[in-house]
Amino acid sequence: NNIVALNENGATLHYQYKSFNKPAHHRSLLIDAGAEYHGYAADITRTYGNGFERFEHLIAAVDDEQQALCAQVKPGMDYRDMHLQCHLRLGGVLKSLGIVDMDPGSMLEKGVTSVFFPHGLGHPIGLQVHDVAGFSDEAGQLIPRPQGHPFLRMTRTLAPGMVVTIEPGLYFIPSLLAELKTRPEAKAVNWSAVEQLMPYGGVRIEDEVH
Image: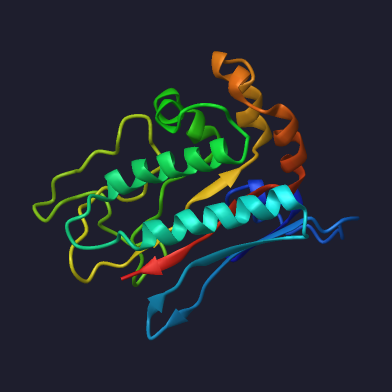
């Protein structure tokens, strides 16, 4: 199903509650939608704000990193490495926007980026939206996910003809943030900025790359 989420619902990664209650304020809109054409699937996400400067800067920053990652999709690239690079890039966004004051490499090592980016870089797409054969090589051997990244949906090295999604995101998920508050890394978080952004849910930008 399509995901159409207003405000804090954008932080629910597969939001399908379909609330029909009109919110008092429209702060943000996240649309994750697609179509089928000649039997092939599409899966595209965009996020929009209402002009609040901090959230608009977040959208623009995630969009910039998404475009940079899309440009790197080519034969021979290990999708796992791209996923880890995505974490470093999003860590850079968190730091540059004053949300987390840590080195991006330390954020990745300590699992801080996973609080704000808890899903994988993307997945294979073709005859199905989440297409098959994302985890095994040509001999059928399983290719493991990177340690600490259980939700990555593809671990293969890219080859000519493959189509994958590139969908970085940054979210403000109450349950994950509550757990982060109990950890030593909490002192690096600008909790005032987090509180400002939490009613906006999150940002995801997604395209297919052939």
